[in-house]
Image (spheres, rainbow, N blue to C red):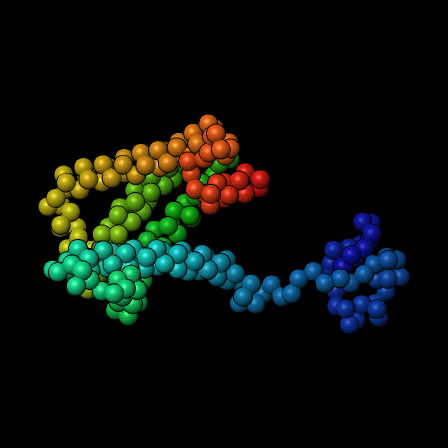
Amino acid sequence: MAAEPNCMYGNKTCDPETFNKTNVSKTCPGAQCTFAFYGGETPYHRYLFILQLSNLLIFLWLVNFTIALGQCTLAGAFASYYWARRKPQDIPTCPLFSSFSRAIRYHTGSLAFGALILALVQMARIILEYLDSKLKGVNNVVARFLLCCLKCCFWCLERFIKFMNRNAYIMIAIYGKCFCTSARDAFCLLMRNVVRVAVLDRVTDFLLFLGKVLIAGSVGEDLERNDGSPEKPFLMSAELHSILRKTEHH
């Protein structure tokens, strides 16, 4: 009920059907019976927070499933080329589409299971971040220390599961086994070649980083030294230059 601040009936509940028959409007001139919210005691309102958490979990699940499907598709396409005895006779006509079809038809359950495990860990990390934001004003050192340890542990767990899932999806694409068997085989294979994996992984990351820096630096140097005139033409393609100009204007 909306009324003047001094009204004794202000901010109280009312019934729109019987409001005009009461003496509230006489006691408080200008009082109105307005709609504030619907219900509040329905199962929907009682479990709204749980429903929102479910929506977040399903969102994370779908995102991770999409990533898993892409990784399995690429692994299958590369495997069809790598394991072909006679190249190019044994290579499929459309390796990427063929790998995508196999992943959708035979490996949907395995990919969904791996994505669900990762989504649960990410959900736990989000909850810990939410608790950390709520405890920022609290001076309980022990609670903040335990929360920091949990955040660190779940961050490491998420990185480990992402690494294992990626290798499990590769084994799924090559051998067509279930997720648990593929994850076990991938883990055993990595442990037998742990030094090679560590060195190759670091070298690959460094080369990718070096390539990104080299490309960005080359484009920046081209834009700095050349202006597109006949005397100083751009080294980049016209399409790339038009994209960069649009980005600069925006």
